[in-house]
Amino acid sequence: MSSADRRLLLVHAHPDDETIGQGALMAKYAAEGAQVSLVTCTLGEEGEVLVPELEHLAAANDDELGPYRIGELRDAMDALGVTDWQFLGADGKYRDSGMMGEPTNERENCFWQADLLEAAADLVPVIREKRPQVLITYNDFGGYGHPDHIKAHRVAMYGAQLAAAQGFRPELGEPWQIEKIYWGAMPVSVIREGIELLKESGTDLMWAADIDPENIPFGTPDSSVTTRIDSREYHPQKVVAMKAYPTQMTLEDGFFSLTANNDRGAIEYLQLVQGEVGPRDGDGFESDLFAGISVD
Image (cartoon, rainbow, N blue to C red; front, side):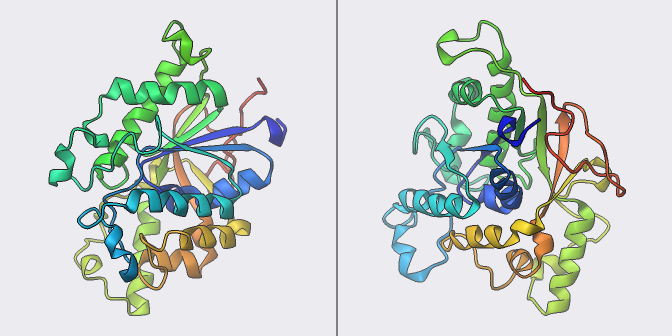
């Protein structure tokens, strides 16, 4: 399969999620000539604003963070070399739901409350138009339990099924079957190593001190991780893309500093949940998302 024949679709919840999770591989495949498409489900209106002079944008103040984050996403995609990106349905159709249990989860227009069929149907024409062989989204826990991540997972998985169904709303395009579906993964061993590195650096992580190293929350068991994409050549692009989100992250400390200061942050992991795993390397990982896919 030539690079031009490869088509990858990612479905994420908020601007910045794509860069944190798969920014390096997005840059890698885009640079190699693959079609890389991104669907973001919300504008991220409920995000915390880390830049003091922009605090007025927060939901509790002027509630103008969403449009600002569109600009951040645009800058991040420019850094990664990705030109094909859009929001689910339309810009701002689904509002950021905030964290689980918050009053923002009860808003009628928030993504968490959205009708699953309607939201998945918004993804169908994208899949049928782009015809991706590969789809990446979150696992069924949304990585760490955020309601929008969980909903994005459900929308991506259901949307893939509907897009392949003969007779489902023909006006949305011809049916298309995605060959391989991946969930983003963070191996428990990688999380454990990151916590130890942060402790050694003197970073004040009170939450990390309370984590049982034998029971890492939100991690993917190493045995379930099928795929490792080594994109260290594109580490600089990932860091620039992360810097495009100043309202949401700082690279000065915490886990994001590990990515910024070590090109191992451009090694990204996934779990294949639909399709066949391609050839594995000496460490037991598949190393190419498109391995085993035939040219259509």
